[in-house]
Image 1: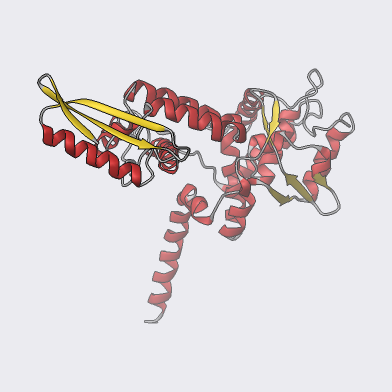
Image 2: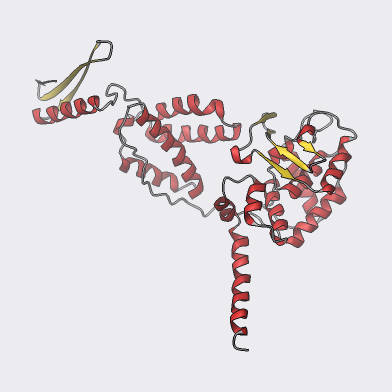
Length: 364
């Protein structure tokens, strides 16, 4: 360790040898006093002996980009990559060339506060989760010692968050009947809509089904992939819990056989001109037509809302929430209960009335 004065300021130099005996030196100047320079030297020496790579101090934005493109990109779905690309842009615009070792917890909270002004709470939580994983990687690399993303407070702007659109059981029946009446074996979009209503699977999971995924004897479909209509490729399911086998009813098997007559290729649902499943926008357009024919005025109802229709049917039939959760491919029951809190509240109101009546019966 060397501390010396240069002009009106002080500088500190730290020397060490690596495992191969190679000499390394790191010097920093601009200290106002000798004590400040000495304190800096002592701290750097302590960090070095603790296993910290004191030479390596990349810009956080650059480190995030390198981390996710190396560790995440080769193993995640195209849709998930979009989130990383968006967050990559956000972090570059905010922190620019700020070094990762300069960022403290207060700086990170300030960043989160800024993002919360224009993004929903859920979006910010997902964003923070990605960055926190990156920071933990930096700790594992020995670049930093503390997780500056820990204990952050998140309170996003949920005023413009689109709420899920739920249908009643009667409306679900009406939608299904109309879709059945409108079906045409030459139009796979209608059959996709019907299949989602009867399985609760995601649109990509249904679009990606191939004939070998259908077991007519066991009455099951194996959901092992998800089709991305943007890039026209078959990829993995959303997560490991989404990789599942779903029981289906006899009527759905009969409906699928209708389109097999003119479709012996791999994909169950394919358009004749492309040989591929229809694009999501095509399915959505067909759904709007069916909704109109059913006299269901729901402006925000999309193909992603069809999973809720399946839940409405199962909930009305008193199917256990755990069974519903497994069928939907959710990671855990709490996720299902959180999404479908509307139905949970409805159940509670009914239960409260039943409890009240039973207690009143005590006085009869």
